[in-house]
Image 1 (cartoon, rainbow, N blue to C red):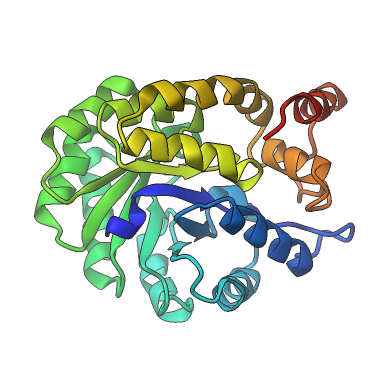
Image 2 (tube, rainbow, N blue to C red; image 1 turned 90 degrees about the vertical axis):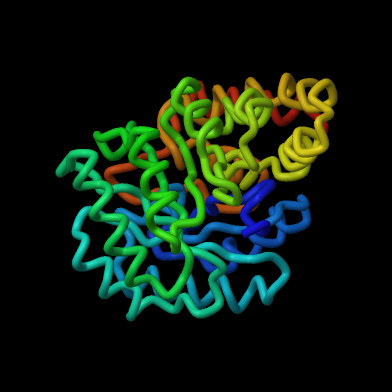
Length: 293
């Protein structure tokens, strides 16, 4: 699981003007982030607009991504949801043979108790052919997975190898890092907090920002890994405005606004998501003109 350290990218799903998947644009984004030096790619994450993709489209995206990446970097596949039984079927129907791990977001909307979260992850990990990376993102799911639940899973379920922690709670992060068992990976899901989180001991990040700005962002993460926080802070300072613009209204509308401004994709999303408001998009254009990466 050393491959899950450093910079992972939760890759977008580009659409064309007809709202169909734009595989040519996906090629451009994949080449862009790999040339930026990232360590691995996460396909079918929330940034990929998975709530509005059909199962057939998801399978097509996974197959395409494996084929086009062609072993240049490892790939993690996102398989999560709020129906535990249906996830067990997904493990049999999704093409995950070449994945290094499954990123599984905690159940959304039905708001299980901590015991419910434990039993959910325990069952899917016991039935998954690949290692499971937990994903705690309470702003989207409506339920925080407490550090005690994550640590219990890390100790009691051998096929759970780490967590993407995106709760935005530094105290919870520090609790995780203080008490995690040896070898349990903890990566950030909050681009704007990753510098202090890595200073506390996190192993890396699964990033949104690195879709658009992979080279400086990955360089910052590598500085953190090397313990050079002075150099990391200098890069992070230059990225703060990017964080603010990218998450001002919605993810992935923000990162798609960046990628469209850079000419890599069409600025298209599927409803209920819409493109950024004009002032934010103009702010992105001004930022990219000003900053020379």
